[in-house]
Amino acid sequence: MVPFLVTTVAKIAIQAAMKNSAGGDAHEEVEREIMADPKLVNELSLEAPYQSRIAVGSVISAIGVLAPLIGQLSGWDTSGWVEILTAIVTLSGAAYALYGRFASGLRPLWTRKA
Image (cartoon, rainbow, N blue to C red):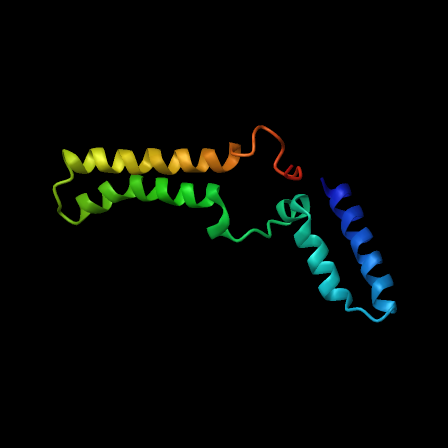
């Protein structure tokens, strides 16, 4: 992916420099072009973590796994409904993360949306 990344960013920078020589702002143009390309956003990991279904789902799953342990260390009774609730939270987080990955089908992450 590195050759793609280098050539694409170089093309964007050259186009922005040409626009800059005509009186535009090269930095803003490069940023706008990079953010408009989902493949570059993915390669550069520019998506905010709270916008990623995969990251949010992983955090929810981690909470579901850690909650009973924290409860036991705190002296709470974590049997019965707490086990069921944390299992549901864990599975929900995993399902949300998988949905985030496969919502657009099985296309690679960097393909443009139709």
